[in-house]
Image 1 (cartoon, rainbow, N blue to C red):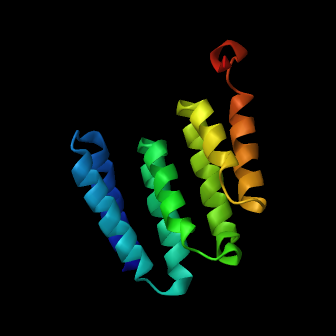
Image 2 (cartoon, rainbow, N blue to C red; image 1 turned 60 degrees about the vertical axis):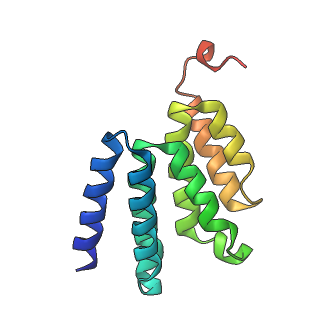
Length: 137
């Protein structure tokens, strides 16, 4: 049942990402994240990660900002979970493919530790695939 509900949110977010109405996307993203936070602990992170992945595929900058908002209030030990680390890496990789400089800045602003290291590595890996002339600073 939860997977069906996630699929429904996922489809709606994809539809809205193609629309020009940013307010609708923000509203639905907010509703999807609220719904995910109300799930039992074992499903909460997996579902939140899936929602952020959907958003990151269409708007990596929005996903990065949303990730920051979600993790800002968490204690440091909660932020270091494997799911949060993988989510940061996915966002960093997607963001670096569209905005390499923004991705580097975002990754270096993450909390020090495994999450930051993983995100920086994802950005660096993506940069290795970009022709050097495209990375002029």
